[in-house]
Length: 139
Image (cartoon, rainbow, N blue to C red; front, side):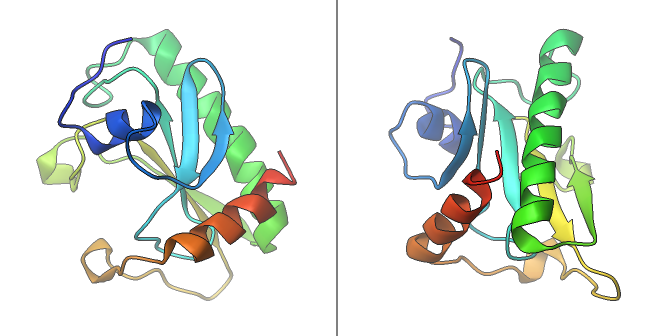
């Protein structure tokens, strides 16, 4: 499996960095975002290191989005969200700051605006683990 030793997401895949795991199969991994836009915000990644949408083969990209759909449904149920935003930033100019393809799955609530990515704070691991456990019940 291709990886980048300097990539934090590759380290999570290799179990060399902590993460609050929601979902895992042979190809994808989903975990809580440590700087969430909203409670329940998760990331879905391919286990193989692909930089962005332009780097990943179509079949693997489709598998990431199938996993994101399942995670989105579970997050919606676990949080009572009115909707889900799927966000994917590709390239530095688009706001990508970790260069391993990842899909943000963010619960949304009517009338609530999301903060800017630049305003986000790191959440404690225990809080992320608790939310991950709550979401996993719906997967």
